[in-house]
Image 1 (cartoon, helix red, strand yellow):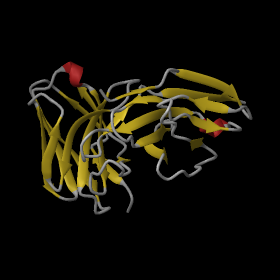
Image 2 (tube, chains in turn orange, yellow):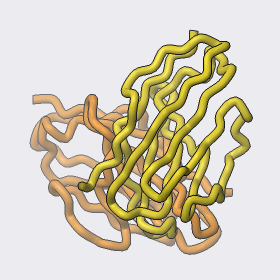
Image 3 (spheres, chains in turn purple, green):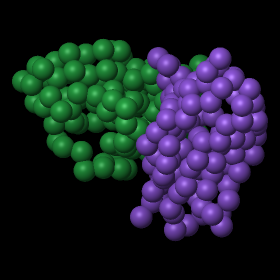
Image 4 (cartoon, chains in turn cyan, orange):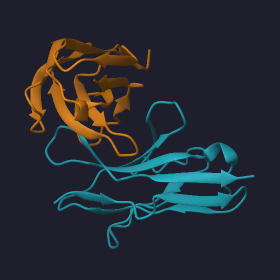
Length: 110
Length: 114
């Protein structure tokens, strides 16, 4: 069965500290993985997708098929990074629907 | 225009009412979606429309009735809802509905059923 696991509900760090938000997935085929972010009172928006291998707002994520992981990392957290982060897997078939993890709330303290 | 626009932003309805949520996008996307998000939970897929045809219905109760009048519009008709249906309803779209497509979300419609 397709599944996305984000083990941490809440992650609290100080400004300037490194951040790693964990994501593990279960999928029988070739996964398409995304990180979405939801800032307070804003819409859910794409942060990263694994196929583009971009760095957005200093965040990176590498797909590790051996460990079935897609962890999100940033070397130096900023206060404006405080938000809800969802890891998502594109579901089976060709419909592009997303299966979300439960989300991790990141709080960056000054 | 790179946005998905949803109206109304807030809706309060009684259990016997009939109301509709509306969604519009002008990005030329041919796949549109309805998701439901309860408080402090991730979004859950309800329906997928691909080229104006319903392609996925995630076993949603018939009191929710989607409609795609054209490639830019998506409606969700609501009738005889229950209080547990209170949630944030998110509309989204993507280019053609392929697995690698980025899905763009609207701000959502907050629904309260009383």
